[in-house]
Length: 319
Length: 304
Image (tube, helix red, strand yellow):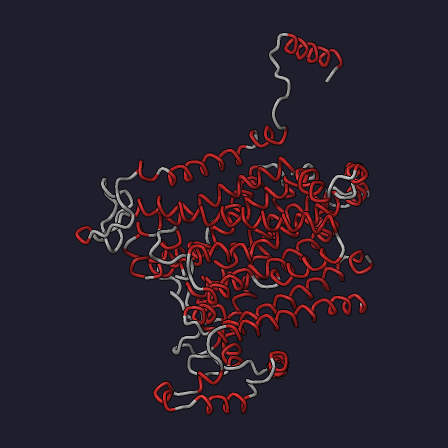
């Protein structure tokens, strides 16, 4: 198991290095360098080219590209991601500020969609060919076809604007006394974000369950006279779980990506919302660092998924 | 079934055959299987209706999608304006029809281009193997380690917004999965005996991969093209909704939905966003139905 994890890490780390290099390249190629942002525009014409060069030298900007990259990488590894162009706030502060909101939303959506998806997928597989099965299939298809922001808008209109049951948007409002007061705020964005993922998990767990139910050990279990629920749950579902775990890992990008748009629709103050603002405002350092950050999250997620599958299915780590 | 009943059945079939009633199986088996898939056929019909009405938009509406008419602002649906008018008096129905042209072009065009590039690289490198395969694989891994929308938005922020840029960006973010798929198919197909036979005849590598092996991998590739089209149409809608996709001056489905960010429009002017949202959903649904039907008819291992 340890060798498996080590081998997997050996793939992940070079990957991160290459991507950090590309991100740095992007930072260098986008207009402006640190010096041009440090100078007050009103004083710009009083500064000579020599003074600019001196400032660049003091900051180490005239070193070779590779040297600058390694200095930058060193800073990043220490948690210094540079500064946002608007307001000059440290990017690490912005990301750390926004991260809890995004994690909250993602974990809500992940749990909700996995539970609902596995439940309906299994029912669909057990009642294969029935009216329930075909209804669930079409509903699942609808789930991946409706743009999630459109679904979000309709939900917003019905439940927040017309019925007034749930708040329109936002997360922690000033009038909230305790942390749990904002629970109604997460329901709309959370459920909408889960929608697309639920459909995927449902389809996948249905076919995984069908596959595992057609295996020989199920026939063996049945011939032993085990009760049907035991065969389905203990014998069938456990084997069907492996591909579902893999799917959830593959769906993580959808989740991170989906939250970018959903966070904007519901004014949820997360990393995705910040990312959109940064793209709109051409705040390149912030755009690049959030992208780097999301790649890091993705690679870590796929690492964890791989380790989980190896734990569930011994064939993976031995193969 | 008893044997006499079986005999009768066969006699009946033979009689029909002799009378020339049963057609000998012409046409593609996969195609016939697809035709018998009800959902796929429904999908094909919806797809064709939306596609054709976008192409022949001038025949269906006399309104100009860009013509601003300040005397008829925010009209609710009427006989003249089926889906009403928007804040500057432009006809929403005409905008949906003309916008469909751009949205479908972006979705289908990017998916086809991604397929050409991804499959083109995947087939060759997968067949050749060696260092070129390793390089292509690593490059695709870099592209695929970004969450798709993050990569798209990152590139939008670097190269700026335009129709062509958006298609290029979509292709950059979409070729990886096509490449992976065709490479994986290639790895198993290149071991087949007919490939060895071709090699021993001295047929050139390029000809073996693209002319002889590729047709056998087309099924899953076509499925992937349809599913990618659906994905890109959703992505265009989402990006344009945020105002970061196709420039707002060009009507697309996403750009029409853009106004719904305003809560007042959302609450009071349903005709400005509801019809177009439904059209996008229906179109993507139809493409997904077609993709599913294609998968069922081309993949013999999938049953259920």
